[in-house]
Image (tube, rainbow, N blue to C red):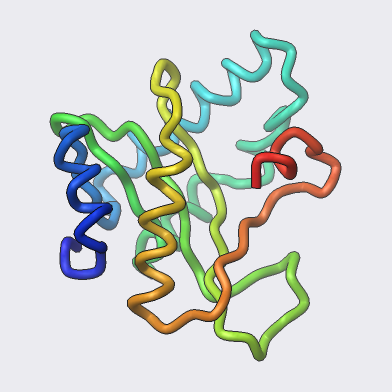
Length: 150
């Protein structure tokens, strides 16, 4: 995967001792655990986010995304600490003509912070490498806090 990343992104990953790669189907349970733990963290911190995430995004959906090679992870010493999907399909954006990537299902392991900028740098590198004009993030329009970050 190094060949798709810019020198700057590779340097950041190396400095942080992170590995970037596509997820494997054998890791599905570890990946699902990240989402369960993050949803629980939201609940414990009174954040109205992902209250029914696992119902709306079952394991089978993630299996399909991994098989399509659209799901990526960041590892720290062989531990999966971030996951996200990059796809050319979108159910929210009504644009089938513009060459775009859509970022979905971003999750970080509870206890790990400030990885958004790394995820976005990686996604930008992938978009540039694959000649996409736009990089779009999917989130609920009612999530003002997240929309302000994006």
